[in-house]
Length: 242
Image (cartoon, rainbow, N blue to C red; front, side, top):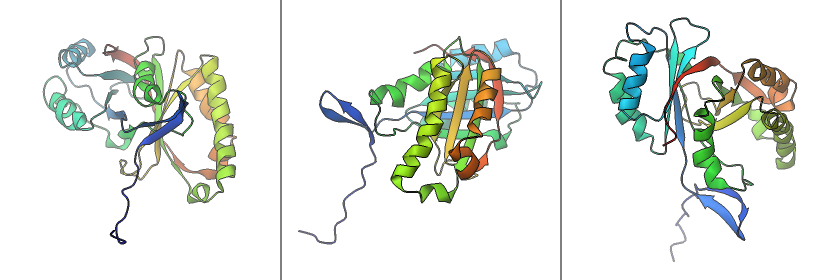
């Protein structure tokens, strides 16, 4: 026996108990948002046709705060998809002349909290359903970084802080006012953020309202070091559910 051997870390996501077994999965969905500040010559219809022809899974948004701006959200289990399929598409017409806004680039991966009743759905399918839902055309995407003080809290206190935050999100979701996607981006963000959040809904006001409501929680008021920048968009094109 090698007393110097070290067990490999368990990197699988853990969910709740299902059919008498603790759920576990090594599958995750990566999602990337790229934002551009100048459409140049191509029309929205031309870009939508190119995205559909390339079978890109994602969403094209109009940037509410930039009359010449747009954003492309794409997703895949294999992050190589962004380097291969998405990169190739954006480096040819009608996208090649777009001017990127790198300060808004967001990349994250789905993760589990440990009690999800359907782990596979949370990791792979629910985020797809949310962003491709034609009834939820409005979106707000932003990164955030928690302070080190939060990480040093006792487990019980951390759960209480997260529960307060989660209750607000649940109430907005059940009322069909705002639906959230949470992605981990540790080591994937040039500004060293921890998470990417997407808020989706029928109308824009509730998405602003949930951010406002969250300001009063312990997590936001005491333990968030950095929030934003915020991208606000409305759907121009969505891929099929595929």
